[in-house]
Image (cartoon, rainbow over all chains, first blue to last red; front, side):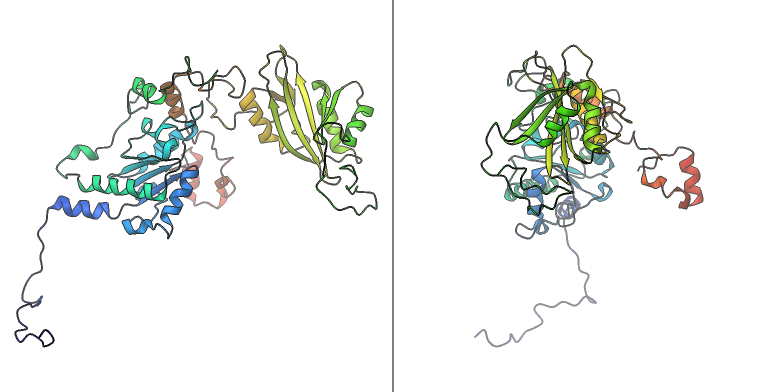
Length: 208
Length: 231
């Protein structure tokens, strides 16, 4: 039955010298496929989230499965900034500069409660969410998130990358901060984002 | 056995090994012998001696605290040669003065001593630096200045260490400081982003200054004209 070789072995043939190999696809699809599966992360680890990030990159969870095994400690070669941990105000200009040093196209993952919202550090020293300093693509909740959570966030980012269109030039323009205030978003919005529980004058969550 | 019995003194023949003191009473444990020596030496300046959980705290008049610490550091019978910490305490009760705290350790005698100086209310927050005795006091005193606004007379470079230098909101660990700071979040962020992280770096501070003579000629020329060594 199937054990004998087919007599007509010319049905499927591959002879490069006789025919050109080619593939038909959308350029968008090809570029996004390549980008999404070779994201080089710039790890910006400041706290316990960085420990979970290291666990994600280590062999148990193996970030290399998603093309991210190469940590880019130089922002010049990085594609995605992963901010893992709280950012004090003193680090704000530094993470801003790292973001500005990264070449387009670039993305940002805010990992954990502190990076996303300030978390439990609702005090004088900590930035209330890094989205007040740099644009963020994916927020990963958790304190700290489990590696599965970070991988889910990375998969979401890959989906976002795969859905980008080359024709849509605006998505990859470098955002310039307002020259006078150096902020991307209006100050009133920052106050609203940063202080859902009151403000400096009317502090509703503590006695002082 | 008191906790000081096991201590081998530098000039005695005792061979006692260090041991964790057990059954230390909350109060009333024997005081560190340095307290008695301080009371003999600086009778007028010693306000009070407390022993809590076996740890001795000596309250000293702010005017003579530098003299007392210098004596503790230099005297061969004390040899407090290690400064563990300098910090300060402000209490919620507005009547209680701000305390400056020094944690001293005598490595030869294996002794620990806590010195406190109370700065009375209404007086300027100033006290003598111990930088001339312990180089470790450099950053510790800068931190106390940064957080509490206490000025240390004689410190060579008293500026902020944790907050950035242009920080305008005050001294965060003081009780009159609101938890979230004095300015709105957007103003705090605007001021934070306006700081230049490289501002304090200079040719003198960078390690490249050590190797300046070995740099290539063109780089030396560019650097000597004030070009930044950063990115």
